[in-house]
Image (cartoon, rainbow, N blue to C red; front, top):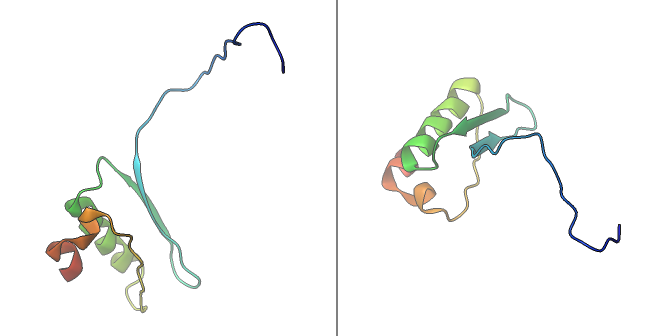
Amino acid sequence: MWSFGKPIIRKNTTKFRANTFGFYTFNGKGTVNTYVNSKQESVMDFLKEIRYNNPFKHIIVILDNFSAHRTENVAIT
């Protein structure tokens, strides 16, 4: 909408920063969780959660080139 000045937009929400991890499956149990940070410990915890929710299934995980994904501890997990 056109106006002479910049409109004031009021929002009744608060800002919440969350690192969301998601694992989506075709035939299994998908998992979504939020963490305080995206460090290697959080990635390792999430990979363990994926395995816990899908104990008897083959799992293929695709990770991007984020530095926490490339650590030796994450590769071992």
